[in-house]
Image (cartoon, rainbow, N blue to C red):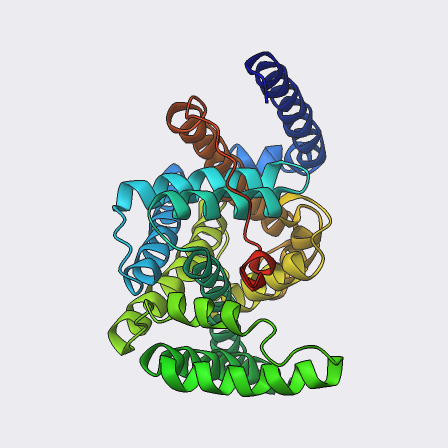
Length: 345
């Protein structure tokens, strides 16, 4: 792309970003205006604690990323990982198609850090699975604390599925020869069904296994990564609890856990708006009301929580992006795509 075209593209992206942020401000304004009286009586010490919890949440997520990359002998500083986490999060929650853009940005940075395409993609997948397992565990604990009559087996299956995946990855990393042989046998059978030469994709499979063999996800790495992931969710849930305390509410901790898990799960299941705006809030407000807060308190708590965990963190992320990445040389590294690895070149 020519420099002049790149400049025009940056201006277009900037205008689009301003428009998107304006629309998002309009979306959240009705909630803010309806709760302004309650917000006038904020306990600012709890607001400060909520801000600290939100900042610690981002730091713990960066630690997850570092730990997983360390399992593949890719060394990254906390500053590098945290910068990418902030920038990618802002892309994900504010831009149209944000999750894709944020994931692609993270992938490209990991490639610059020295991760192979397979290792970089593996890290993204594992980080996502860790988040799912952590959220499931938080929801399960909250449900058990309140004595929920609902069947918790779906949550248990999520944790069990994650554990099985970790065991499989550990076995594959420790026994690359076995994984390669099993894959070749499966490929030959698949190729026979497709009436293709038996050696089709075999060379590509060996290349993928060779890259995966660099991953040593042993128990210490697994425990550290999962612990940081749990802390990530706990900090975000704590931010919601502290926001409730800031407006004078006294919800039960079990109620907060259930409300947070349900709201987050809803926002991920129905990603219609950035950061689940509208979707997550529609779940959080009645759930917080059921936990012992009034309707006005629940709405105000959600507004404070959103201003901190969404708006403040997004602003910080774009500042980090502007200072650290905006002037960086452009690269042609594509996003995560395992399809290119299956070329028999």
